Length: 602
Image (cartoon, rainbow, N blue to C red; front, side, top):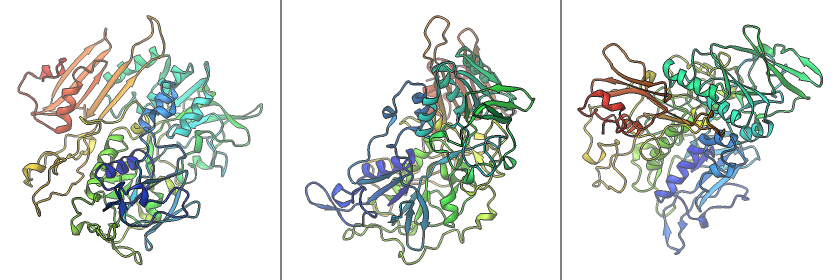
């Protein structure tokens, strides 16, 4: 198995495969210096006894060890060192190639081609390529036919971005953050903690529009102001002013505001472009903000270039079914690059849940059902007996569409992002984006369930509506909870219920801490949001606000189910509400006001 992408989704999948006994032992896997991927064979444990194994190779473009992207803002704020947010090292037997980029998928030969010339064969291929930051079409962002950002302009998506921005910030530096979503709020807070003079420019009417209503956003805005962040809403950024030496470039047009070639992330978040450096930010009303640093927090887009070039079905993301399978039955996709049932999640919790389901599907015990593409492992060969490498497998959904006819181009095709300045782009018709697309990189945030990630077993509906519950199919008792058997339970032969991914019900969490001391310094602000907090006619709304304690609590109820909720400042009720939301359970038969008491109605 080859996993393209060494981030949270790919690393989680490898960890789950090892936990399920699917990973090969160290003796069966070639070292990182090998010229090609390890061949297939039977792994041996320390006792020398043979066992069935899947040899796993992770190919990651970043040179760093895998890390928790959700906590990057804490590294920028100086709260954590980079090594603190590193994920556990791959288990023995997991081969990891860092600093290597896959440039092509050769489906006829079942190999991936790397930028160093190596060809890595696969029986099963998993795309966990993640997403790229959206670079808005601002005048002065690029020179004509140029692809480099001015000095001082940073994306905020990778560890290199974070380290470059952290090295550039200094006390008193003038920083402008473009984008007031989850990522922009987190970045602005982190820069303020480092002593920068921060202006947050949000094109929308209020902060974190995808999670908060205007009332909750007002509480958040007051907290940001207490941290020293100057917030401007309904504020469109038109362009950047740059200087070369002592000359100031007034922000001339750049090829119609064309985005960086292929929408690629800028390595390090800092580019050297002939000494060109940012000096200010121009607003649509003609006002200009002086700036030493500019942070682009305008959302993300799935990285789908490899999938498009390989002829896989791609819409906004790589299209997958309930088995996380693409239009090629030997190729899977998880995480930010994947689109399931028209939804691109862009959240850490969804990526973790998808990795867990896929690990269950690809684990050699119990064997995979024959119709699902990969056949059970041959105990004498230790490899998955998939289609022959001499020819490409036939996609289940028919031929892949022409990439030029896709409804929403991916970031690797050189098209300009369709975003308004200062905000993430709107999804294409029919696409649904759950939560804030930049949430995975905006910390400490993401979506968590009872066991550290979102509960499986649910599909999100447009606008984060409470999804209809599927009652048409009766499930076995052991599978009724999460649509498949619980860990440790083995169904009778012939009655196994294969795992399926049915979508993720997400809960976004954020804690805005402060490093300041003294009586005037605000304390930390905790935030939790889930579902759709906008009520429809007939819905019940429970709403409590305490201006003296800077708290805001609101839940929307439809019938006996939670539709959505927002909690700021006081999260004493979040535990019970989160459990009810994630499991889609009926509410307790108590007065609705008890939902917002400290026991959460429990």
